[in-house]
Image (cartoon, rainbow, N blue to C red; front, side, top):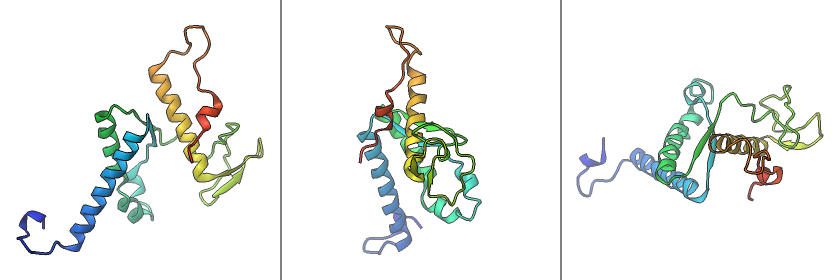
Length: 166
């Protein structure tokens, strides 16, 4: 039942109110992300595949597909690049400090120490840093030459690539 069938003075059904509020939240979130950043880096998730797991209700309730679609069209609208890092990129298993891949990491490990450099990493923060680094690398690879005018390689300084605002 849409809102068009409700007459004047008829209360809106609660399920429609929840849907309207969630859609409004998604639009405001994606607009704030696109307008507030020079580029947006996201992970390309297989939402359909995740919806078939035991996390199905959480994945579908979060509207990840809707948020990704809105980021894509608003990014084009406001001329902000939206970079999707591939779903097979090992963002959670790579140490952001040294780049070593920890193949022994499991889904239940929320914090882990890198076996190569000893850096203690929070899984979510490490994923965010790795997605940002890879997304900026992909963005630079698509828009820049491999060498600048002086013949030096084009690469972001490590400090700038790792800096995540608080």
